[in-house]
Image (cartoon, rainbow, N blue to C red):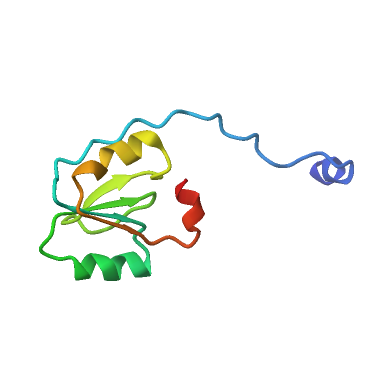
Length: 103
């Protein structure tokens, strides 16, 4: 019966998930800190280079280091950007493959 449905061109894909608003992230309390957008290979190298300075990492995925403050999300979202306290930051690093995605 399944084979018959496929032969007739019936879709076997699941319907798309509804857009559920994501909660706003907790804002950082850091000032005079570095903001690092992206925590891939390059981001990890930069994080090592700024040791000793407060660091906030913005990454959609897990960071895996409990010693690093992590804001989960896309920095192109206003609430994620606001949570970084960019006005109080000294440094900004954008280390993502497609930098235009930042907005």
